[in-house]
Length: 362
Image (cartoon, rainbow, N blue to C red):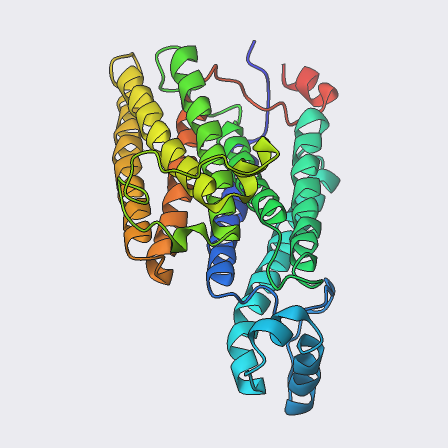
């Protein structure tokens, strides 16, 4: 007996809602990258999650600027700034925070409506509730990251930056995974001829590897490690440069040794391309549908493009436009890996109705 689920209309609405939220998170991550690269992230020195409006007159702008002047970034880096200069870095951080709050509204209100009207129940409702909690945690983590740059060093902690970025990717990936898994009773059967656990494991492995490379990239960004050793494939004139793992204790090299952090990012990126190539080969040589094979082709091609974007970003010493393209490429790769894994894993529908509804439908 087919497990009854949502009506076709409600399944469509929930899928669309989740994919819209995923698209908004995609934009949020790119905005966050721009905020980091333009060093705008410490311009707002207070966290006021219920405040929506920016400064609206010169008196309010002056007060906001005077607040900023009390903190290390102004005192140690930007003491030359006027109010007009300050506005240039403020607006991007303001847009980043406002967009995050908008995501919260776009997710929360439909979620409450779906629950209140009985369209989501049981395990699926708890899954959506978990996504809401993760989104809220991301907001707290964002401020926790910013706060690290308001004490002594006019820069955020690379540890908190990495945590903030990887949680954003996780929330984004889960939104896509859950959206693609929503089924209605009237949906046609999956076009995959049979479950493909090996391909699914490879795609999920690639998704996890992408997350690892993203974490590595966050440490590169947090330490400004992309601004040195701007050659490839040699690094400081060598394949394996002197000075790797020189810090004591040893494990700090992964997080605080600028040379090691950049070297690891290179190695992990190359390893990821190989893993994606293996995933592509397994899917192309298996029984996957033409749709999934096309996605695998795009996955492999994007891996090559992303490697080129990374190398170009390094060689050109991190121009803003190219660095943002590189981060966007990581998001596209992650999207493809999650989508492929969802499509080729054992098909299951979300049970989105109550047991009484299920019995009635049966």
